Image (cartoon, rainbow, N blue to C red; front, side, top):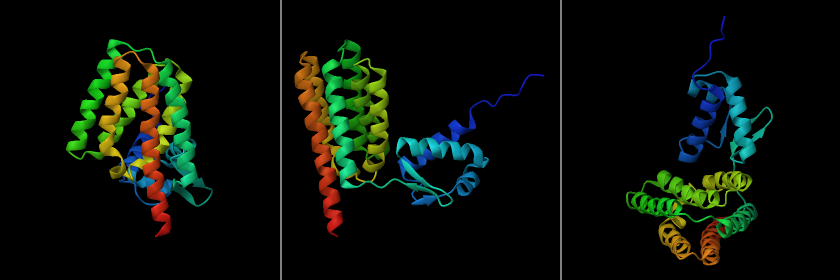
Length: 216
């Protein structure tokens, strides 16, 4: 007899559902367990456990043995480190990017969507589109390892940005336009400068926010 296959892997479904809940803020409890997630999702603990381990490896949660999983909290040093890595890698990606009409068109479309989501205050889609814009830049370097590392960094940054959305979201479209303008002119070095300035601006706003909160 042939083994009956499940249409979609349960671990993958659990991973996607839990991650979405974290990033959307619907899974906002600071601590959650395999049992509570199993009841919420209606599946066994085994795929939940595997999904949590993956999210732990991505840096979105931390797992404490026999206590459960906790949402990741970021220190100012961790934010500075993550944005330092992101700046270095994205700066390199833009310098190495192979600029094509298709890339320019995709970047333009992404900016238009970012503006639309900003105007209708669709926080999640705005952040997703912002990440997609930067993912397009990384992909243009045609370096799979670079894209993989940047995606991991973006996942961690995303968790923090969903909690501090208003700090820098309004400046994204203009910053993205500056990057696109330089690439259209065939000036990858100017695009690199624009990318680095954009990332530093967001980083500085986030660090200022953390500094103020630490004083309260």
